[in-house]
Image (cartoon, rainbow, N blue to C red; front, side, top):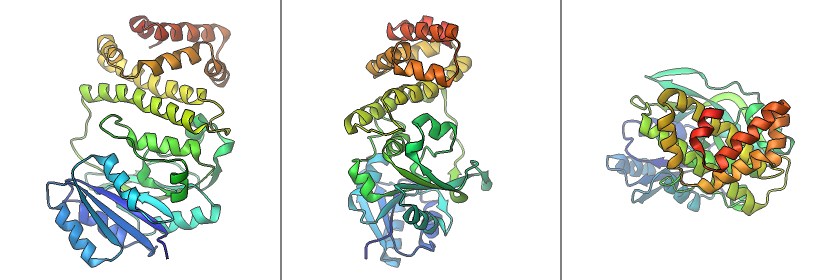
Length: 344
């Protein structure tokens, strides 16, 4: 009998946390699981810990590989996974013993492509209140556009709170993009999955515990890098929608991705500008790797479907809609200084 869920755990330099993580997986009330531990060339004692656990439980498989990053480790696990569904656990986190039984049974009942749960952060050893207010139930994704999924319903940005139907992942050729080039490979994967999915189950029950490690504050250089890479991430999402020709309400045109990007990226730019100033922000614009996508965004926000939909959604006055067209034109022509002055 094939496993109900294959659980992939990418592992690198987490020997202080790994045993707690693995013990929580072995304690699952869903017994028919496959556990794939991917040792991503970890320099500490993690490889030995993985091998010891594999001796204890025949459901565990271990992959030892050269370090290739989180995306590569997850992809390697997916290549050998045999479960009906696939889930991911980060190796410094832990999970409730009923997590996979809850997600699997409801995904089967609802014939869902994706099922996800709520989570809590753990800070300085203290479990925080649940991270989000989530209504338990089933969502037919065709009833929502991509923006509505995030404005009206909470959808996680990370894969570790989810399980995905394996056949669904294969059908849409979903895999993690190399995180050497895309910092938000986790988010890109799940956005692509949302674009493709038909039915999603979600529960407001906290079943995942995310460890927030100290010393994780992001400095200016890292923030600017993330802003630049976010453009790359959305350009990849745009390409995905083009290649798969997704025809559903959640993606009636690629313009929906452009609007989603505009909302997300502009909010980030406004925050960065207020914190670091115009000169720092101008430097970011000059280092954007995918300027073609920025031009595509600007054209659609200036004259295309994205402008019409966004204006209707935001109930923009005719005067402000003209202003939106004007600032989009500045962005199109690379007049970044003027764009910052006019829009941010």
